[in-house]
Image (cartoon, rainbow, N blue to C red; front, top):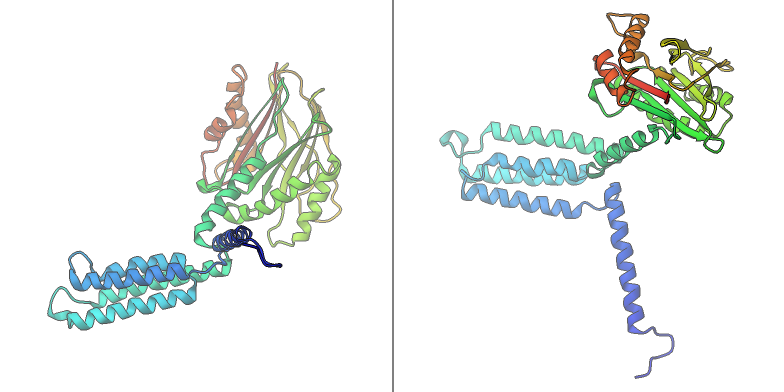
Length: 381
């Protein structure tokens, strides 16, 4: 058979139809997980479940109690938009009315629709409606909301990891959010610059505690990670200070300490923005020395100057940086906390500091009501 001019062969039309179907399915899946897709199938399934539960209640009350209607109501609060959720509630109310009409007055026997049953279903429905309205306002469906938070936490954890160091160097780090939560007001960003010869590490403590501080630290960690390595070391803190000022937060200050370490010579510069001093263990003397630059808090005033302090990590030396949650508490001041920290750290001098950061936090700062962070940079003997 000859094909008419302008027509496509059947295989070509089938390939195009299959491609359009794949695109439609992919788009529907993306929209569904973004919260933009239709929830019609879920509504239809839940309406069917309401009908089945209502029929089961009329058939065998011992196995299908009237309060079983809370199951599709709960699922609807998680799956449906508020408008469709009201349709589900209407179907559930209709099922209760039909059951009450067929069973008769509730005071004539145990297998009746009581006011308590109606109250339970209504209360669960109200909670589901509030959840649906909040989810609609945020724009994140429940089936992706928890996954997004998990992905965000993992990205922050990866961003906080220090880069691999060359032979002769070792690092340890531990971050413990307040209250055992997954997000902290303390964060670390790090990068190796100048061909990998320079290690830059920034430890920041955002004002406040818990989730309030954690929400601000999420924004700052991304911004600081972009600035680090993109600017000369002495320009990082002024740029971070300007960024924080532009946010115009009510509680918008932060402390930060910036280490610039030459991995070949061991020379370093330490710049501080109102942060606690670092502690350096000098292997020759076995003593801990305070190392701190001078500078104001981030986010207080524009044009702030940050003066570095210089030092050198010799073989066997250790540099320890931390946040105030590690050494400060209601029953002791910072000086006492730092003495306790160095006393605990002395136990690891002989055997090395591998795994020491986590144990030091457990030994020194068991109070879980504050964010705690500890960073150790060690040069092997």
